[in-house]
Length: 311
Image 1 (cartoon, rainbow, N blue to C red):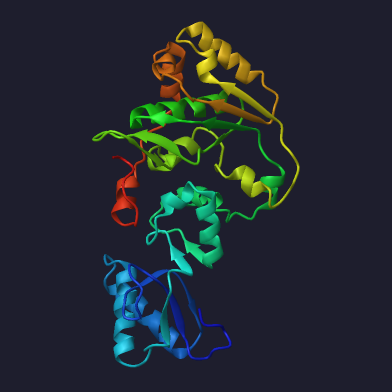
Image 2: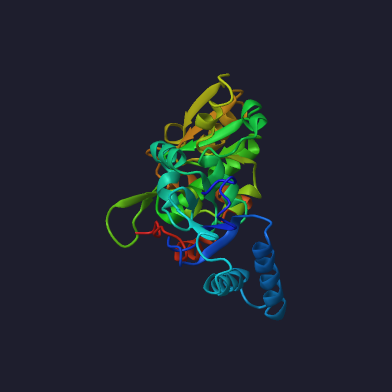
């Protein structure tokens, strides 16, 4: 980005789908000086939109920019497309791969200046920003909620959704915030093997947020920037307690509800899913929290630089 002391520029835009000065701009955010040329640009865009209200505003503003570039009113460097390496857009890089990796998050933050969370819908943007360490509300980390952290969620897409729903139910009945896992292990549907993927590409974010408060999977790591105060922990393994009987399930529930540690870790490792989901209590719990498959993920994938986690 050119600094304010440089008088050569009037408008600086983020790249949309490719990086070139002739390419289209993304109007999600930009820097603009209050110059006559910039005022003319916005007035022209507004008038064009008022006559064509069914057109996409970004398309209109790019068409106006092109006219003003060709007429030498806003030619380069009066308008500039910024390098997406520095001014990042989640439409242009594989953000799910970064979501799952501490080292990749650090590398992204070291390289970039800003991240535009485009093509990530609604409050899912907030989860991704928090996961990437870009949430700076100190009290959010210094006054932590009690947390339920599920570990080692794995299986088919349906099994993973059931496990997430059951973990959300446990968070709800123990008055805890649900911690989104950094990743889940997804069994391939069409081939042998598996993929690791962020759970928000499988479970609909809003259906979880409607059921319980939540924190990002990197919460403890991000919290270290603001405080060194320790939290108390407890660990319970579903496989070690639940044996497929309703009695064992109710015993596990009682253990969780009586736990007084601030962080309750529930491990799904080695669990045979039928031992939980076939039990009447668990079936009712999974149904009641209403966790559904991600509604917008196919659309996000279509316009973003990542591939479907389903293999």
